[in-house]
Image 1 (cartoon, rainbow, N blue to C red):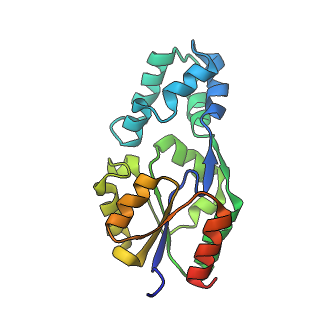
Image 2 (image 1 turned 30 degrees about the vertical axis):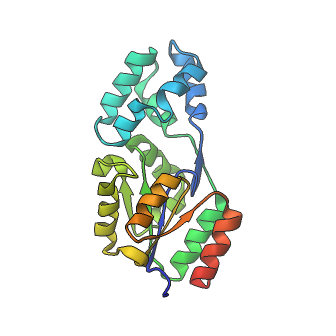
Image 3 (image 1 turned 90 degrees about the horizontal axis):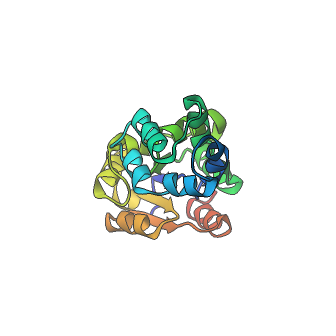
Length: 202
């Protein structure tokens, strides 16, 4: 079988680590909640799900957090801090750069939100070096729902075994595999990097 024609990267826990506690620690003192309680409001909750599915705008999301937590700090502080929860996974970023040098198209495919993307764009130069991006909040669909996978196929013009997809969540990988994509359930660069290096003869 020929190598895939493009590599699709999930963002969180694949290219970037993240921890909402970072945001909660900064925002907590400006709310009526403790940092721990605030984290429970913003970390993988139904409220965040609505925001990351594009059902809420950024102003609506911030207003909902204010109402729920009593956050009374500046809006600029919330914007800056909410997305400032990431740090790089160097081995995976280097892998993406090696693929690009070989002329292999790479894409980001992420359940995420406007504030996170805004912050990542400003902080991480590697983020600008992809052929395209599918963000859940822009297509109003979150993995593992079919619609967001269809959006990726439309963007790339590829499907089936021409795509190889890296994600840390089993349900997301399974949805890609069901469409015939090649998949890698990512847990550690020590495993993922050699696999891709061999596959593409990097």
